[in-house]
Image 1 (cartoon, rainbow, N blue to C red):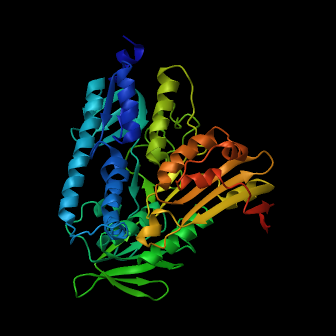
Image 2 (cartoon, rainbow, N blue to C red):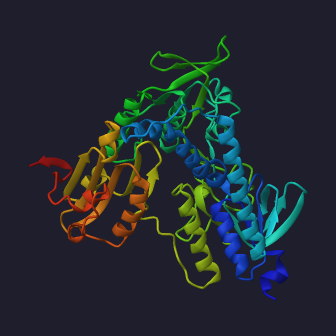
Image 3 (cartoon, one colour):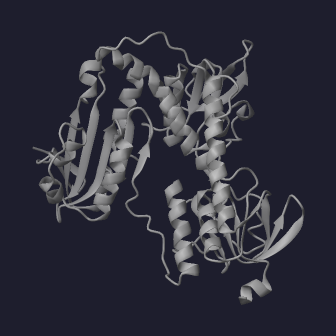
Length: 468
């Protein structure tokens, strides 16, 4: 029996049953450690319960109207169609229940103890289980409580609005919606609701949506969304929301617009879920946003307490939380100190069309390197030739001219997320533009453009564009 087992109730106690916390608990338990994991809501975290998974299911549902329309161009006659929101919600809930069951069974099979309760820190080694008031001790503790939707409490009428949490559980589909925000969540839900037949307006304080993305991706998606019929209001914000006599909501904006809608959704970012966790009592420091401060190995200011995933506000992506969990296991239980690698993370925006991206944007590369080559292709996707759609696909490769390394790749178009995953491997391996040029194309595909752009579209010299 280990000294830890003699001194503490558990070798490891995990607070939070999301992807990162579950992975750490399950693997540690499979290694023979005595592990407990506490979750106050449902296992699976934001991603499985109220995030990526149900969102992607909604994305699929919202794409069918366009599929039905496209079929006509290929000789199909599609009969009358109708959408049932209730059936979609029921099917989604069934799938989420199945996935949560898998998470629970994985923990149980590994030997971890599951505690359905909120857990709060009493000190660096003691945790209080709120449901029973009982306290337990642990040698090591992981805080993996994730993030929570910002309720924007300063907005008058915020209590009348929904966030992404409630969007997954609406009893009825609204006829019209105003979505505040310009990031992943706002843009994805704008496309989802519009695809399901909801009159959709997006309002964002910035000059363009998706502020951290390459400018061609941002502008291209903006144009595509407006072409579909989504209204986008920029450089404006909601000032207040109130009920109107018709039973809907009235939203007034800073620039003097008044919008009558059935629902208002606030997608204004997510905050680390740390309130009331007892972090101060345990000696765990947080930053001004409430995020837990960690070192390169996910250690907090308390020697035996670690933090993983969105609660650290490093990179808010599920695969990152899982990666950080595995680095914790390697470091603490396998004698192989490993720090999470947050460089060159491929990501996707499941808008319509999708964005897939990895590495530096054109703007970022121009600031970092003296000479940059930009390879850009824009074309009508093959599927649109018979369907009659006017959509455009945009592909970009950003190359550091000094060593020919591809430092950024960006795609707007069908299956962009799938392509971004493979491009992530390519850029991570340090491939050069010459490697792309030597690679044979797969024809006819959209992705063949990535290996057939032989001449740069333009150059950047010290951040300034040079054509020709």
